[in-house]
Length: 556
View 1 (cartoon, rainbow, N blue to C red):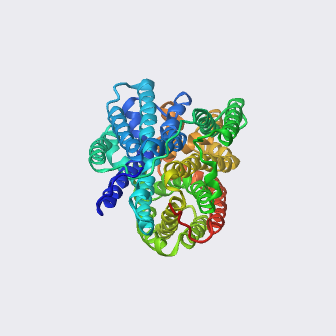
View 2: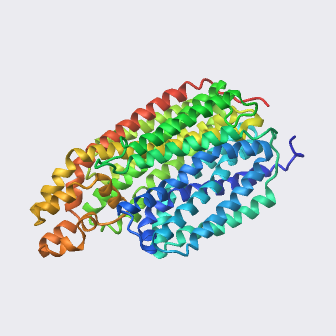
View 3: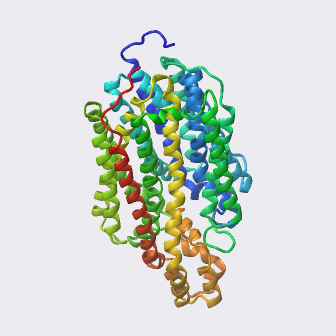
């Protein structure tokens, strides 16, 4: 039963607290990307060595994988035992995990394992927060203001993934432990504030825990996500592992577990995944739009960062060590677009409905991707910034109204589970998108990079045998070297090979121009393939969003 009436100002307390929580959770989803060179240097691990690649990938994706797996279950627990109670617990888990990450006592692989496990626990806390924040806001705000509230909350969350890039670069330049420590005081403040101020005002829906559904869903999604992360790694002498037996086994076992999950959910009395919610047209097409937009957006950030770090910034005089921070700075127009369009579209969608804004946003996002494909690899920054701004505005125009429409369509007793389902589609799509984008990029690089790299090295005095060995390395090693802010040629050649070269050849190979010019053509082919895929995903998302029908608000 709902609690006693609350003060008119409570909704703004709920909005401010949950917005801080979502902002923290999404900042930590990306803060590692720019900071990883400093973190790996701090613990004394070379992430590009084959035996250490697993730590690199799980530091990138582990947080998102665990969030995807748990968010539906935690949303359902919020419906059963209280959304605020689960949300408050999430703040505690998140804050304690952030502190433990800061205090990593080990070096080497033990230190890397501590960070991977800590990130998984931190992601668990974030899943508690993300699973219940939308339901708390939907409970607190009347239907005619939910677009504004959920819009601000959603835009803060999406913007956090871009703000994390800059924070990671700035803090890692001072001390890598600050990357984790920064979350502790804000998490502690949010924890205390939420315990003192947030109230249980939503409808609870008692019932048993669907253990069979929870276990099969968690196992199935985890196996699929792990399979994706292994699929983009080299295996069996190939550039990628998609055809390797372990990856195929993981994907097959994950698919079998998901089939078992669907069968259980169709029969159990109190299912974790509320399949009957898909009878609500606005929820179904809104969630489908969420999934497709995340597919189009999830890997985009990685491709833009690699484009800037591996090609454009070095060509414009930035050292490879400087590129992680400056890539985040040069991508600020994307965040600005989110911040500009999200609240405005949220307010307008309260009056006019989500259909036109969400559909138009996805069409605009597709247009921005086409414009990116038309840019030369060594572009003019004002044109690039304008396209990023268009992309941010378009995605902001979609995200806020779409989330408000999804939450408005849910019965009061299913808001936690429904919001968790929507978040699961969003989070899992981001991991899937990264796998697809990297796969398409590696395919593009594989076509011409090896031959170009071998010829370029030999022209600068590298022996044929060494050049052939370097050229045979998987393209993913080249991508990650650029992504992590390492000097790719210095990293791939190593000090022994470089010591036998003339001063002029050594300077040319490790300078600003050799690698960007070498990679420009094959990288452009990979970008075109990845952006074409993302464009198609955004256009299908636009069609799905239009299919949601007229404005719909569930009457409780």
